[in-house]
Image 1 (cartoon, one colour):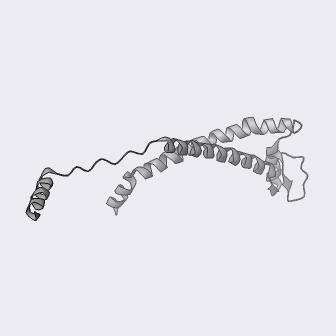
Image 2 (cartoon, rainbow, N blue to C red):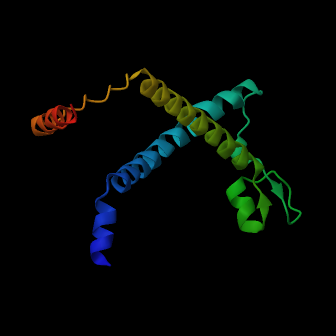
Image 3 (cartoon, helix red, strand yellow):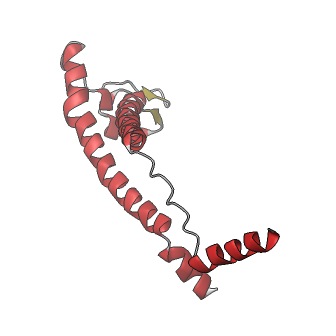
Length: 138
């Protein structure tokens, strides 16, 4: 079983997948920062300034919405729809970037010319045997 696992782990696809997961996690952090630090503040500013989507919630225990989200969570359950909006924007940006990357890679693959198959070289002894066969038929 250990040998099979080593053979599986040594395949290029497994290593490529591991690298992809690591880069994806790092890229996810970049997108989180882009959404949280640039996009959402800009949207907040466009919608009248002073709005902070991360603190938008609906309390489930009857308290008002004047508390910060962290404090409201301590008092009971809340539906943090502002955080959901932020995560959704984050996902849409990430999905769009990945779509563009896949599109670019597909274009690169299409542009590569397909190599012509190498000509089949018949060994000399086979050619001699064919000549002998043809001579014997005559």
